Image 1 (spheres, rainbow, N blue to C red):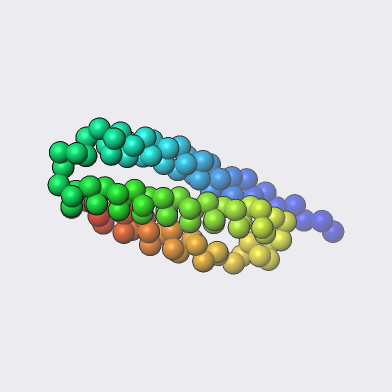
Image 2: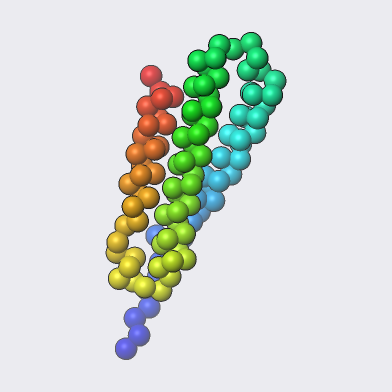
Length: 106
């Protein structure tokens, strides 16, 4: 007997979140480019390093989130048993996001 499982409500939501995150990351790339090409010359070195560090952590967050989605949607495609195991990058992306949020919020 074939059992059909609808994963659209869970995996589809994760895919849409990854696409939206990529779009927001594109805006962050643009902001970083504008900042470093036009406005960073008058700022202290510590502020420029801080902005570069935030951009680096944001890049790591996107890379880890992409790894989660790729592992779940491509590598483990069709293997429902493998879908039960959470990729290592899921926890790492949460940790990177927490570090990013701690840096930008007071």
